[in-house]
Image (tube, rainbow, N blue to C red; front, side, top):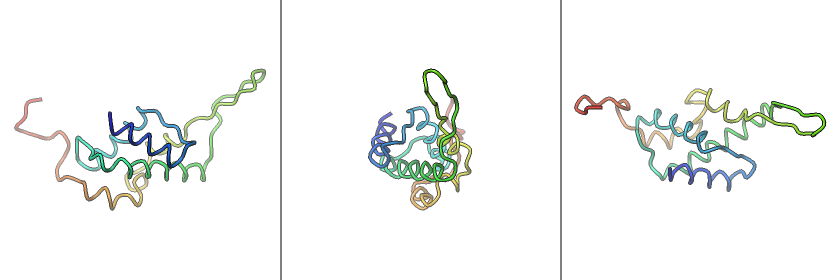
Length: 121
């Protein structure tokens, strides 16, 4: 998806340490789609969504930091779990979108996704 790559590019500019997989960004985009009552997301929102993700990342790092998921002794490797992404998925819309709801509300549609009585699916 073109918008996923654009969001990844914005994230790299805003916070080069934050590394999210495309599937993780797609899950966050699905939350945005549900909030907006849309099956698509206007491309112009890619920067706003990236800012939202980076702000949530910074807030999560400030609160919890990284959580160690595994430690090796002889190889001396430590792995950290991605608590930032897990936190984003478990938050309410108000917590996740924060101050960006003002911008997102301009793109909301009236209705419910997937409810079209005149279309065979």
